[in-house]
Image (tube, rainbow, N blue to C red; front, side):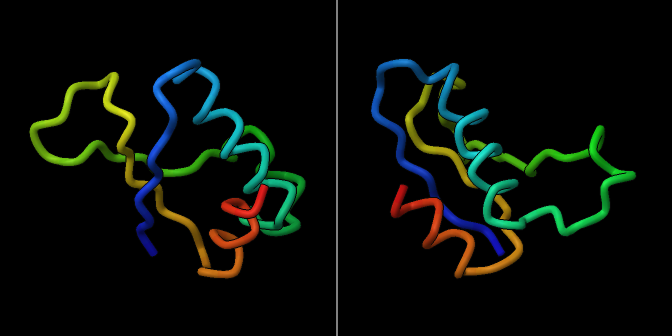
Length: 72
């Protein structure tokens, strides 16, 4: 499921890792400890947006995980 993340412009380099860590905390990658090295989310920029854009799409496994991340 794809969700739109709107990041505050400051410290954009830290936003993706922050979301990735929260996704792991909330169980987005399951319990497979053998796949630890492959744990990352799929990210996309909206069409015609600059890489420094505060808008990013992220694929998460459920709306519940997205809501938990948003609350943090």
